[in-house]
Amino acid sequence: MNILILGSGGREHTFAWKLKQSPLCKALYVAPGNSGTAAIAENVAIGVTDFQAIKTLVLEKKINMVVVGPEDPLVQGIHDFFINDADLKRVSVIGPEKAAAELEGSKEFAKEFMMRHNIPTAAYQSFNARTVEAGYQFLETLNPPYVLKADGLAAGKGVLILNDLNEAKAELKSMLVDAKFGEASTKVVIEEFLDGIELSCFVLTDGKNYKILPTAKDYKRIGEGDTGLNTGGMGAVSPVPFATPEFLNKIEEQVVKPTISGLQKDNLPYKGFVFIGLIKVGNEPKVIEYNVRMGDPETEVVLPRLKNDLAEIFQAIANQTLDTINIEIDERAATTVMLVSGGYPEAYEKGKEILGLDKLVDVLPFHAGASLKDDKVVTSGGRVIAITSYGNTYSEALKKSYQNIDKLHFDKMYYRKDIGFDL
Image (tube, rainbow, N blue to C red):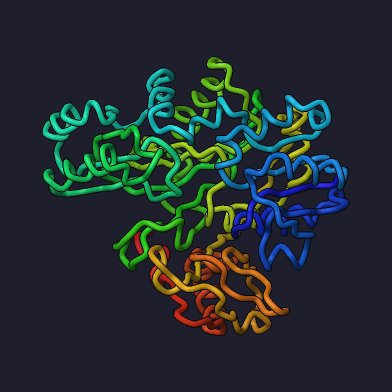
């Protein structure tokens, strides 16, 4: 197969690294890609939502399969674009159709889906600019902390958790009336705060069958001890030590099965990854959110633990024969630590040369916000590179990641030294 991956982050470099190992993969393209994908595939300078340019590329390179990394093209309907185009409809697309992508595209849609299919989640109500006063009243009925979520896509930054009632009211107004997150916060979901420890569950589905991938836990906040602003993710570990067989069974019975059957009942066509953000409250799983693609940086610890041929799995998803695949998992733990640009997730500088990549030993460096300039690898984004390691325990794997990070340098490089601190 000729395969095209859409995206430019650490997730897409990991996909490229894994697909490249498959004998089924003849030629591999990444649009737009990064310095990491450039070393193992052909990068093409096309935006992930430029559907016409993607079509031209698919026809020119005789692409057989498109693997969609980020959420934007899915929410905008890239799968439907392929199905409805006579020239493209035979190309396999890994990622749900637009109607199903609303699970990530709209927090309200996701909450209504969970309520309809009895999937455990926090109590909630949603509000818009006209009902902001009712929103204030609802906040008054809750105990702090207060959770405010922009309904639409806000690049992982649209969730606020606040301890002060007046501040929560002010932020609600800022989101709804002053459009703090633009279009994304024309509606805001307010929900009860769930106290527990978070983890992520990843499910593959072909629309009928499903397979569960290893669990992972990521660390979203910029500061150590989970403090400071939310980021796209500062590191991750897999497996999650507190996810016992009994707890994993609860996740499958109470969350995964009703999610997959709910997609079928609601006629939401789905071929791809379902990312379920969970919180363990007491010993019960509750769903915080759905994503309709793999997470980043969780991909950088989940895929390295998958022993199967990924292209073969994707082919089975396309053909709705996922039930014939037996998922095999590496017993070892995998951890990843994200190196970020100084100042991120606020303003940061780009174009800083990354030194020491040639000195890394026994780790997998997955490039994210990094690109090639005059044959040098330089920073091009906030999250720059993820250093993934294997170990018999997550602590052993983390130690290896941190030892290798000591060999790397770029101006104002920052990373969290406490990944896994709460385990």
